[in-house]
Image 1 (cartoon, rainbow, N blue to C red):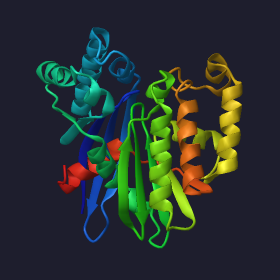
Image 2 (image 1 turned 90 degrees about the vertical axis):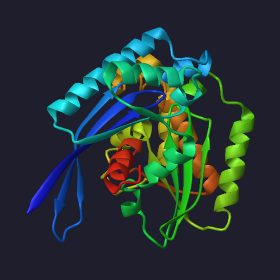
Image 3 (image 1 turned 180 degrees about the vertical axis):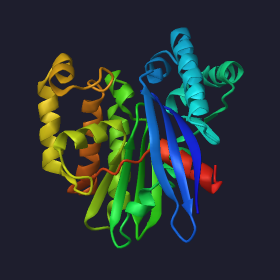
Image 4 (image 1 turned 60 degrees about the vertical axis):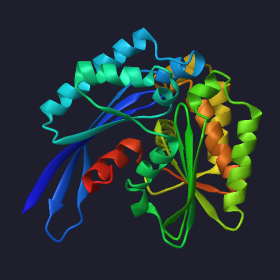
Length: 296
C-alpha cells in the first residue's frame, strides 16, 4: 500500500523566489521518498532593494504579490496539502520586511516566516544532505545566496559548526562586501577545518548548479578546484551579454554567477578542499522535509 502526500515550500530569496512541490511517497517497511513534482522560479531581486536602499520597493512588492498569488493557485491545482513559506536575508534586512509579509498575508493568504541565517542553515541541513554524507569524511557545506552565505562543517556525519555571513552575490554586485568580511570568513574556515584532513566541499545554490550542469559531469562526480578556477576565468572574459547569448544563461543568472564562483573558490582554498560535490539540495528541499518531520 502506497500513500502519496503533496507538500510545498516557498523560498523567498534575495535573487529569486521559488516554489517547490514535492510528492512524498510512503510505503510500509520502505524509506519515505521525496520526489520533486514541480519547481517554479521567479527572478524578483528583492536584495537589490534591501541591500542598497534598505526597503522593498513598491514595484517589487506588487511583483511579489503577483508571484505569491500564482504560487497559491499552482498549489491548489497540484492539490498541495501542506506548505511553508520562508524568507531569508533580503526580507530580514529590509526595514519594511515585516510590513511586506503582512501585506502578502492580507492579499494572498500566505504566512511568511522571516528566518535568520542560523535557522536557514539548520533547515538546509535537514534536507537530503545527510543522505549524501559519508560518515568517515569531513565536509564543508557552502550555500551561496544573494544576500548571505551559510557555511556548515560536518564530520563523522554530525554538524560540528555552522555560521552565516553577510556575503552574497547581490551584495557583491553592489560592492557592499568589504575586505573585513572576507577576512572573517577566511579566519573562520581555517580555524574550524584546521584539525581535519582532506576536507570535501559541498555546494548548493542556483549558481553552482548551473556551473555543474555546464561541466557535463554525472551527478555523483565532483568538480575540481582547477576546473572551477578555469570556469571563473572564462566567465570573467565574457561580457554580460555574451554569457546570455553564448551560454544560454538567464538574465538574472549571467551577472551573479561570477561572484558566486569566487565565494566557492575561496572556500575551497581556505579549507584545503580539492573536490566540490553538487547534490541538488537547497532551502526549499529542507523546508519540505522539516515540514514532513514536524520540526518546522
